[in-house]
Amino acid sequence: MAVSGVLTDTQKQICDLARAFAAEHIAPHAARWDAEQRFPREVVARLGGLGFLGMLVPEDYDGLGLDMVTYLLALEEIAAADASIAVSVAVHNSLPTQMLLRHGTEAQKERFLRPMARGERLGAFALSEAEAGSDAAALRAQAVWDGTHWVLGGAKAWVSNGATADLVVTMVRTDREGDRRGARGIGAFIVPTDAPGYRPGKPENKMGLRASNTVAVTLDDVRLSPEHLLGEAGSGFIYAMEALDNGRLGVSAQACGIARAALEHARRYVTQRSQFGSPIATFEGVQFKVADMATRLAAAEALMLDAARRADAGEPATRWAAMAKLFASETAMWVTTQAVQLFGGYGYMRDYPVERLMRDAKATEIYEGTSEVQRVVIARELLSLT
Ligand code: CAA
Image 1 (spheres, rainbow, N blue to C red):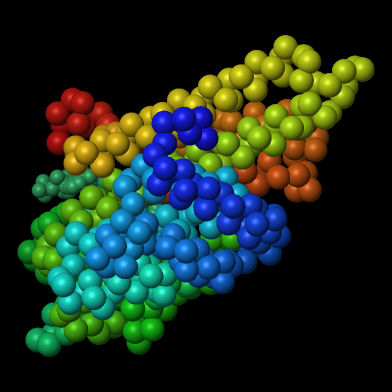
Image 2 (cartoon, rainbow, N blue to C red; image 1 turned 90 degrees about the vertical axis):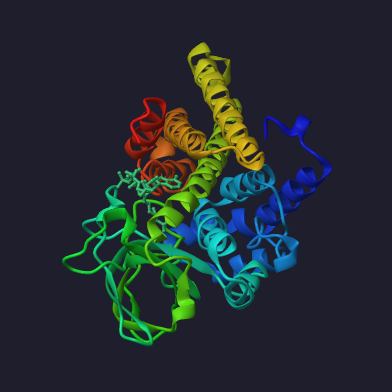
């Protein structure tokens, strides 16, 4: 990556490990997994064995205890090989593990976080519903306290890892009919996927990220003991929003990885492809495209790292995470579109990698908050509208 000159030894080692693993065990298979729409759980398990499923979890809980900068650099390496694998790893690291770390009791950390950090259990995050996407606080799934247990009912949508995870941190309403409390009436529950009544749908047939598992989930009277509630019963939406600050940084790393892969493919291709008697890299129109692709990618990486350093310094990072995601995901879409253009007719064929990158890039403008939601988050803070 462009900033390698300023990395610490630990950052370089983690990046090297991620890059080497991705080059050997992920990149060679990415096109096939995409075509077969197959989530390679075994590869994610091997990443877990190396510590990549506990990147932000302190060593006291069996994680690697990395800072945000190192985490994002590693994620970018994985995404450059296969963005689908990166989604799975990022959702697990950024969302459920972080919510458990921040808001879990010691008992919850022992029971749920520790095995997740060791890579023995995969996590997911369920916030969206069919009628509550950008307007996430409008969700309707309901938890009812029956005196001894919480009973969860309703339906969640677009849950990454939803059919492959071992547990899903799930946001459902805890307020009651007649006493609705909006964003303050939502709890975050740790839902084991083997709990009776947890029913994942069939994998969504997506444009891109086809090797990552995304499903709708029905909660059919899922009975949970009180130790499955994270923190306060009315604070789950706030916890989810905090976690999404990390999640959005993770998406920026995925987007940078996708853009970097597209730039690398394009660079190689334009030096090899000849038309009108010369390699197309000798044409100024092609050179300008490549120069712009590299410049935008470097700017996206710089913004991502700036946001990560703020998060590591304990500064409020909401706006910066939104900016990093917004800029990196739009960069990924633009860079991959240019790459397809540079490949010409070949770029449009499934036999070449750039069309997959373009399809994968599109998702980064949508999930964990659309580009429009990121603009809302940024503008609200700048204009003091919150
Ligand atoms: N950190 C901490 N608290 C936050 C916060 C943050 N980043 N953002 C908001 N909050 C708090 C607010 O301070 C407020 O708290 P109070 O009750 O104390 O005032 C509360 O949360 C409600 O906030 P808002 O009034 O701003 O809520 P809103 O309903 O107006 O929504 C929104 C704002 C930015 C549009 C938000 O709904 C949003 O981010 N929507 C997009 C949701 C999203 O990203 N979904 C992705 C789901 S995951 C996915 O894609 C798939 C997957 O598997 C990973």
